Image 1 (tube, rainbow, N blue to C red):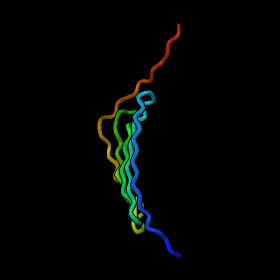
Image 2: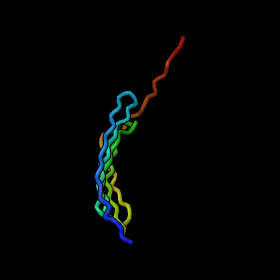
Image 3: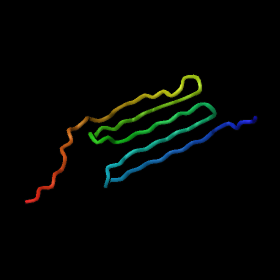
Image 4: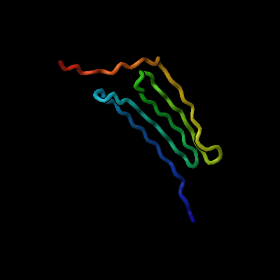
Length: 81
């Protein structure tokens, strides 16, 4: 059976100030090798960045990095009198 050589590249980014959903991802694949990175803004104010690679020998490997400082989140409450 003849199998093709999988090869692709994709990227996306979301920035929604209403929901505070801010994230992005970029990934490439060439045969058995996959490389990528994604980042997202966490609710505590830090940015989590994950750089990863995968292949058929070592599997999935990720390096996780956090930037910024975590902040205590105070929920907003509506007060009705």
